Length: 388
Ligand SMILES: Cc1ncc(COP(=O)(O)O)c(C=O)c1O
Image (cartoon, rainbow, N blue to C red; front, side):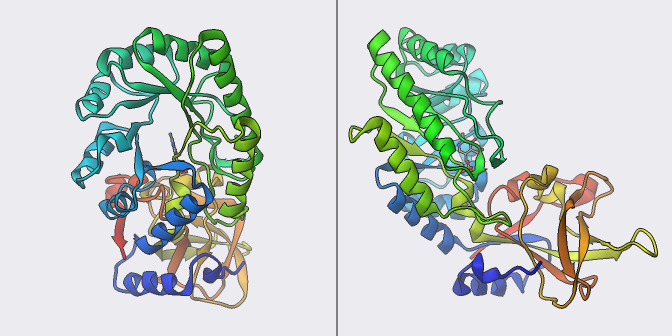
């Protein structure tokens, strides 16, 4: 398999990334913030009606937060630590922040409230009671369970969200507790390849809006459609414009022109294709004299940023500057842990001319890499990152 880098990056962007990469010791991620800006503008154009809350868990680097703040973005924040990081860049008003994690400590809810945040996600009674106590009068939106795990490369449902009936009960309870029952959220799963997953989820939301109005006189004001928009990996997807066109149509079919506030929480789709992780081949071996595939050990692995290769879920395109005949390889990381194998079942082919010391370019690795890196496993330092 040969990878054409130009189907993942514009020539100008690849040039910028490569120029910086050539000056650094591996392993590291380089990120072109220009690309993030372009993706942000594309998303705004695709969903002109939506407010974008960047899911900063994808990559919370100050360079990215500042850029998106200056573009007018809002932020989906998962913890007090992310909140501190975000507030540290300055000039982010609390109305632009949502506490999107349904799993939170009582004192963390209070911390957000004290910093002025008034929008909270929830999916359980206990959490709702905590929000009512620690963040009185705040707006809450309830996350529902959505299908789509089969077609999302990195599924999220099951752990988060609740059934429709429970969501209705929670929004009624929110009102009783003095909170503002603000809306409904869902996440169809990250890297969702089936656009129909949004159709199903929006259909469920519509039922909740109608039932709450009819049965309890509650008029919800917001739908948070989460993330799930795709990045370019080996398994290609439809482009963002197609996602936008279809999802806007689903919204219109269910809600007509009288749409509630629409929120999106993109992470992967904004950041992934802006980055390249660069590693170096540490060792090449065969397990027997007659083995038909080689093991390529590189200086980055599951514990240094490539955790989304778990179960080979995310298949990053890998580029090398070597060419010629290719052979199937197993690709593994540098630690003394046998779980540190990125790809064994899915057959990557790399050139037979690849040698120890050559660089591997892991494309589309701007999101969910740097922060997933272990602090000191086997003594290896966390993954470095540089921003163009
Ligand atoms: C609540 C929430 N919103 C948004 C996202 C971002 O999703 P994606 O990276 O698929 O855009 C996530 C990802 O885990 C999430 O948990």
